Each structure stands twice: as structure tokens, then as C-alpha cells.
Image 1 (cartoon, rainbow, N blue to C red):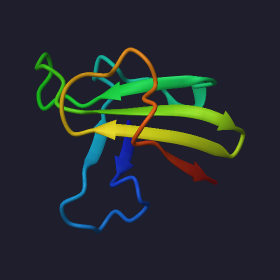
Image 2 (tube, rainbow, N blue to C red; image 1 turned 135 degrees about the vertical axis):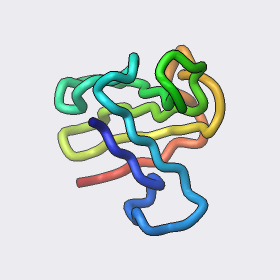
Image 3 (tube, one colour; image 1 turned 120 degrees about the vertical axis):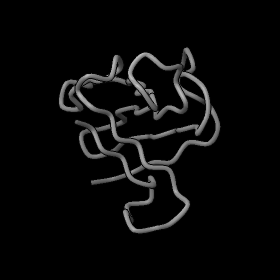
Image 4 (cartoon, one colour; image 1 turned 90 degrees about the horizontal axis):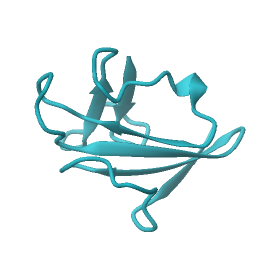
Length: 88
């Protein structure tokens, strides 16, 4: 399972998006296998249309760029706007 909470690192904030991508989700992929970029879709029910997405792009070993939307399916390419960079 992939769990992305509010994208600010605080899982207790009310009103922020939470993405829980289960292994049965059609877009599930082990994060350890992502070497360039990948987009996860959130589905309320198996087989339902996507109702949000999180796009992750590896910039360096300890740096990720992340973009997300609360609606729709993954875009074809990594977005140019609305991107945040995270460091570990």
C-alpha cells in the first residue's frame, strides 16, 4: 500500500487530501521501483473512475517533486504548475 497524507507531512490536518493506494488499485506500484516519475490514481471503489491523482517525480536520491489533484485521472505528463519539492 502507498499512503500519502496531506502532502505537507502532517497526517492530522483536517480538510487535506489523503491518498491511500491499495495493492489492488490499478495504478498501484511499489514506490521503491520508481526511478523517474509515476502517477497514482485514487479510486473510491474498484473499477470506478479516478477521483484524484498524485504524480511523483524523482529529482535526486533524496529529492522528490509532487503534484496532485482532487479530481480526475492522471495527466499524460508531469504538471508544470502546482508542484512542491520534498527532501528526505
